[in-house]
Image (cartoon, rainbow, N blue to C red; front, side):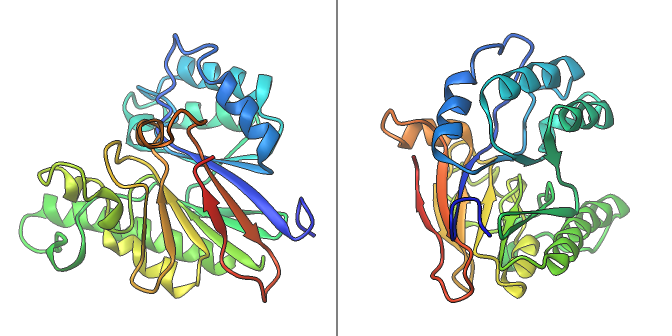
Length: 258
């Protein structure tokens, strides 16, 4: 049974970059999420420098206003200070389900999450050839893709959603400067999303990208980076709202930016 009949309403946003001085900054956003959604998904860069103090601020913001289940993944900023394990524990203790190659099922929807990684897209993606450091770089992208595949494969719920920080397609990062595009995602992440028939993929990281695109098989991909949503939402609360039908015969999810 879904949380709201046969529909699960998912609010998604990434790149909060919560800092030590962010107390009160996110309460209006999370309060609006609690009014309109059944689940909140956070797509990485939850903290600004990956500090435990920042994680504690975010937990206070969430526990004061967000009365719905919270699912998230880490972004690159959450690893910056070398305290990722401590940050994860603080968030988990505060009620956030932080995914890293695993999944959670809520109301008939399975959420599979990984950070993802860079490397570029399509024929111009970085290949595993040459210096060991380049091979290690590519191996990281491959391993993130394999983690996502394993998580999607284990979901038993009728609907699957991929939760990422890095983009799985180029379309949602195309408005970024071309020099940084290869560092904003990897098309290796697209393969498991297509293979396991996800109904949607959510990511952040590309602050100046494009709000939505599709994989090669038509899976909708949404860039929910907070700076981008603030720029395109016309004054409305900056999160993407998906309405996901959980019945097998139902159509793909409807989406809006509020």
